[in-house]
Length: 222
Image (cartoon, rainbow, N blue to C red; front, side, top):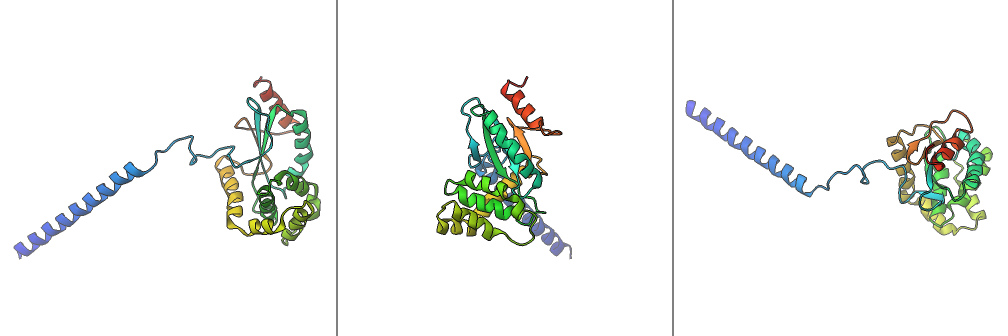
């Protein structure tokens, strides 16, 4: 009895050693082929991406203002005219960027973002951006889909409707919207509108706080 037991134990030990060797081999090869992690790489959340929509480009040295927005959000709608005034006031001094953050509680916020992204693919993002906010009272808080209304806006703007419909139906368009949303969450965005000025979250309490934060950044942080 002793000999079979001993042989069995030896066999088990050999199997364990082979499994450990295989595991070490896999780990070593993963460490050699995996790309190096970098805090500034695409894996880390970025306030601005190359694909982000720039409404105003102030050029080199300009202050960068980024807004995470929801087209259906009433607070975003209330900030819209303020933002438009600030864009004029600081024309040439700021680069203004907008990113999608459709809140789950709004039935048409993602539909609106997808419509805007479809328009962006034809170089008409800002036109639909304006139209969505200017008409928010007509469709905001609706529980049924208003995708047809947004399509009507695109048609009125003279977009290529076949290309628009294809973009709306393309899962990549929704993925582009979701990418902004998920990155916003990684940056600490939980509500809209949320603003970043030169990469720093702007803490807003009063309506004129955004202007004050931008003015301070334009003045060199003073």
